[in-house]
Length: 136
Image (cartoon, rainbow, N blue to C red):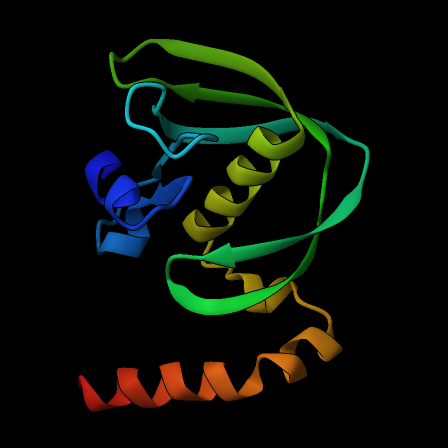
């Protein structure tokens, strides 16, 4: 998953995005593989602050919109070595974790966009829907 995230110039990737029925995601706030981290069965606690910023998603290429997220949070999870981790994240890494955790819960950025942002992305979303239908 880390290699796939990097190949697509992403900063995070959740298992459901690649068809894996697991509560697992990988993140790298620089997009590199050396600092990439794996989080299994994540739980987000102690969220605080709030800011709106533009986000995109590897699952919805070319769809972008302003999304409100917590600015600081504590993440409890299991790492790739089976160890329990508890990390406090702020800013961009906190945003990435919330975005990827949304995927684990079946939530996409279009679900969090304002109505105006959805309208602005309507054409691209419709193109993606049509492309998905043709694959069935």
